[in-house]
Amino acid sequence: MLMKPKIIVIHFGEIWLKGGNRRMFVQRLYNNIENALKDESYDKLENDRDRLLLYLNKRSDYKDIAGRLEKVFGISWFGGCTTVRSTRKEILDAVLKVSKGRTVRIEAHRSDKSLPFKSYELVSDLIRLSKKRVISLDVKSDDTVYVNAKTRQTYVSFDKHRGAQGLPVGVSGKAVILLSGGIDSPVASYYAMKRGLEPIYLHIHGFPSPDKKKLAKIYKVSESLRGYSPSSMLYFAPFHIFQGNALDIPRRYELVLFKRFLYLLAEEVSHKERADCIITGESLGQVASQTMQNLKASSAGVDQIILRPLIGMDKQEIVDMAGRIGTYRASISDYKDVCSIAIRGSELRAKAKDLDAICKGMGMKKVVMDTLKKSKREVL
Ligand code: ATP
Ligand code: MG
Image (cartoon, rainbow, N blue to C red; front, side, top):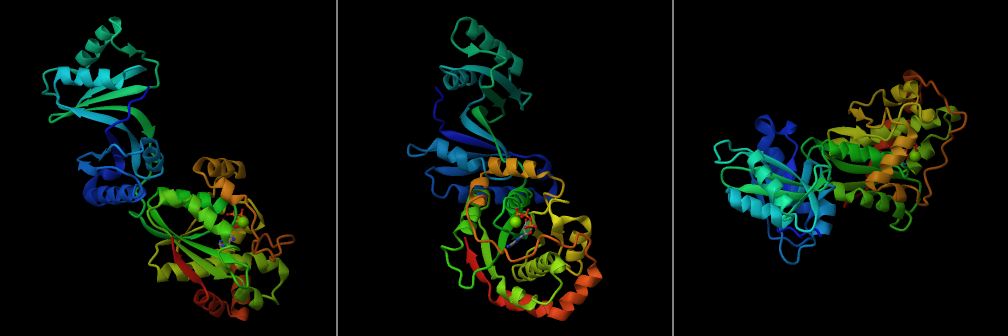
């Protein structure tokens, strides 16, 4: 049986720690972990040079805490840990204690080369003990005990969990995420957060009088992404102003025009919120509005950078990912989408200058600003 650890050791990726950003990155990770664990019981979170140590107490729920840590971006791995003085005897005792009742593989590493024993000597000691059946060892076991001997103390870690990888949310700035009721955009949001962007969700709804019940699905979707970010915001914008002004435009342009409207509105929100980019769930060629020509025409005239993390993914890959990150169920629940847009017979190769002319004719700038005024902003 696995013993409940007193400490969880948290390792962060090394690549992004180079240079002057280090302190800021580690501090952000520290804050994000504190935030993720705000409903959990533990004693303290300590910064220990190249790792963080989370001290648990009697009331700590290790499984629950591990589940939350698995969603914090910027962690490469974490696991249970005990720390002992760097003497051969204390290290061996600690290894025996954490491996009791299990068959383990040992990985030993000595960071301080001046310590009076070598890491292979520790392993030889353990092999000797396994012959006496004091410990059960197997090089093929996937239950690994890690020994990291340092000058001041030695870390003996076990029950290794893979972290979410990536960068701490917030270090790359903020993103306005165009969140629909579908499967794709929540996955795009996951990838944006993974690279350190803090999400500001923007959803366009088709209800004349929206309320929490009608928008329940969108709350559910954003809730399914909640564990990945320390904070997020949700904008609800109405569709009807755009709809009322787009009555006379050629039907085949409706979908591409709606996209242009989405981007322009997201751009205004990005200025208001000091965000650095727009994120969408588009993937090349998936539907009519996502041909290369249509993506190009609909984003023409939008100054804010638009990033599409799913651009090269197949639908099935996106669906699989939605399942893995926990957004799929919310994404397939019922919802009354903005559905009056003609998809059949849509233009596949829209031209930017045609869209420009349509936008001018319908007063797109005012449509966007009026929609922004009627939008509702919520801190999640
Ligand atoms: P998704 O699965 O994310 O709904 P989709 O395959 O249905 O995407 P589209 O409907 O063309 O494709 O939407 C493409 C992208 O445009 C979405 O991923 C999202 O980023 C944005 N989008 C679409 N509809 C809305 C909406 N009502 N509110 C906000 N953003 C939207
Ligand atoms: Mg959709």
